[in-house]
Image (cartoon, rainbow, N blue to C red):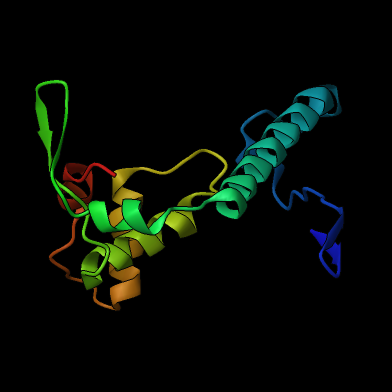
Length: 132
């Protein structure tokens, strides 16, 4: 992203390894490569927009820890004042711009990395059990 002050001048997608795109490396595949790069750019811009436009009122923030219902299903609240919840939210934000999304295993790995421990109580099963 090239910016000047608060204005974005241009955004580029650079590929260091076209094999990672999984659409071939031959010249005949160039249109598919460009299409995949365009998809990555669109997803990135969507994520940037969501991060920029995110606004939660004080009232909503205060109600997040309260349980709620969706139909007949009871849902627990999210207490963002707990250190583990903040760590998981930080990991989700870090993984949000991944071109192919992310898995529960990758989320668990990111949380463990942020904790600085190789054997953590936060594993793939813990990350899959949470609904955000």
